[in-house]
Length: 343
Ligand code: SAH
Ligand code: SF4
Image (cartoon, rainbow, N blue to C red; front, top):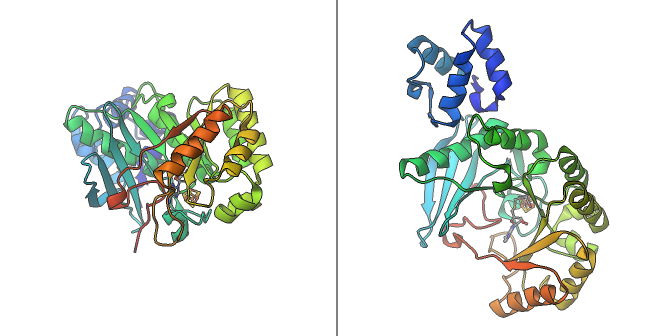
């Protein structure tokens, strides 16, 4: 199986092309064609001599993602694409349009091993990690589409299928490739990685001091409640998650986003708001709440608008900044936690 060209760092590509006996500037041309011109394949790299294009086409796949299905939300601003991969596994990625932002929500794994009870990806189980190039390719696919309309991506969230910090190397390699100033040049500050709370990986992420934003999925502020929703809480209980979060903010001086899907009568209570405020006191953070999106494998219901408002007001009253997120793409199951492949 030929390798995915987007797996390679710029240095690795240079080495590879050098072994072909090509002059040094060729690898720079290829990198530019891949990440600035957004060439979808070797044939489109018209700055290169034909034999080199042919050799590239024989030696590499360009992402390996085949769009196999597309769903458009009735709001007209949300598109979900199902991509097939060379091993016949599939993933989904979403593009959301806002007034000024164009945000893609991409996957880091096919399936997920974390088993959060209300998440459709968790309900399908773990299939495999994505390669860095498969993560990069999702972004480039949308970037190409947008460019054809004289538009561009403004934000990337790694909040699709999978737990990105469980696939740490590939996810961060993808971020670094997308961030390369001589290539796609996508600002790290406009990339957000969301984790279920793998404490050691959060500390590692802090130590590496990238500008990539970090979000942590909480959904519960007592171990008992959180563990009933997120099994991983048994491995990394709240004390460890918050210790890692504090380590992150003190090391990087960057604000953390906490995510909280509001489930009626489960985690939308004043007690939970208070417990969260207590744990997060003095921490450089803010909370994103979103009413739960429906999935087939979980019976819980979204909190009503009033309870959402009351919960966020309770956080604010305790001095915690809170934003209520608007649900998007629910009619085509493109919302948070709704991505899953029925094979
Ligand atoms: N694995 C990572 C990122 C992918 S999930 C994580 O869990 O953080 C992205 C976000 O959607 C997470 O905050 C997750 O908890 C949330 N989510 C999962 N299922 C959901 C649902 N049914 N409704 C609303 N949010 C959900
Ligand atoms: Fe995995 Fe995130 Fe879904 Fe949990 S919420 S099962 S970590 S994708």
